[in-house]
Image 1 (spheres, helix red, strand yellow):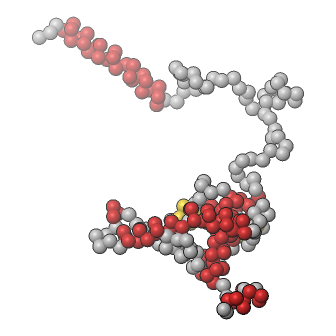
Image 2: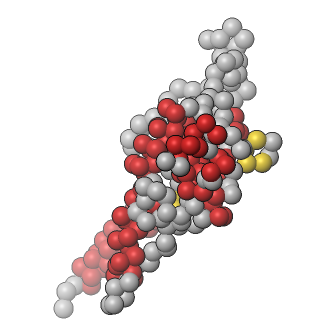
Image 3: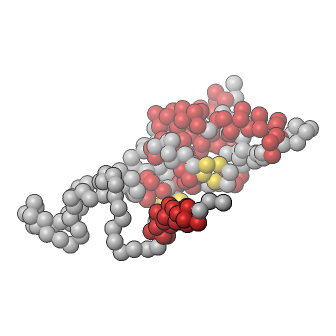
Length: 225
């Protein structure tokens, strides 16, 4: 049997060893008006000016600096609602913004971007028969059931009446923000290219739904040959 003094000393040492951990737990859980201890200073205490204070560095002695005239933000609605959102006077835009002219170059640019970003699911003709969609449909129709519990939604055809009737601005908005299971492409495709894609989608729709009356009279004779 160890001496009672040894037992008492051991218990006391255990209690003292637990004190730092108890203090740390209490400090971390209890709110305090005092500043926290910063062992690594980093940029916590860098020199700065509070709002509404004097800064003698500037002629007007204001620490809060006003916006510089003529500076435009690199994000947000810098290009206007038409260019950035596809909206004109609260309704979907029916035409391209002024900075994106309707030219053959714009349509060719839209075709190139469409082929890069859209054909995997929608197909080159826009009927929703892209290679990724075909592969997904094949996997979902597997007799053993969906693989790993995944699911797939048939890619939308741009020739569907619900899409064909959409204004140009709405198609641009869908490319930007996505719709249903389709994610948006704002991070990958600049706004001007999204407009070019939307214009090309309209071209695809027109190519599949055009009538003889849409062809200029001087060119109709060649179609009958």
